Image 1 (tube, rainbow, N blue to C red):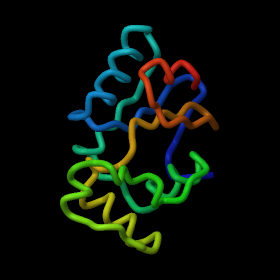
Image 2: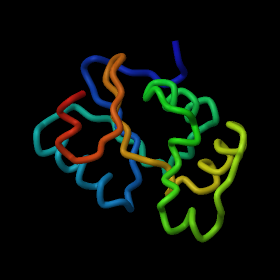
Image 3: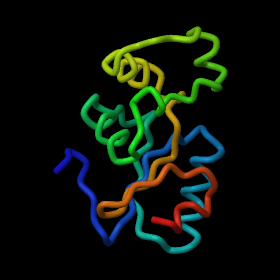
Length: 121
């Protein structure tokens, strides 16, 4: 069992309140009356354990949680070979470059690419 509590009765949405995709996913969920717990990663910093758990739930490496196409990533970093702990530090220090939103419900987890993806959860 992980540190992120989930429920079949509610969606937990990890999102960036400044990102268009995050705002759209949240608005879509609200519009459709989905019970949602929102966690703005800019206001509520993620722990290393939470980042690791999200990556595991998505079935990806921590490195894959970083949007390496984001302008802030490209401005601060070049192609890097970090270890997982370094990638966690990058995400913690620059949460805006984490791929998001991520929706969880019970034992299901999805990286929301379009607002309607939240229905898949």
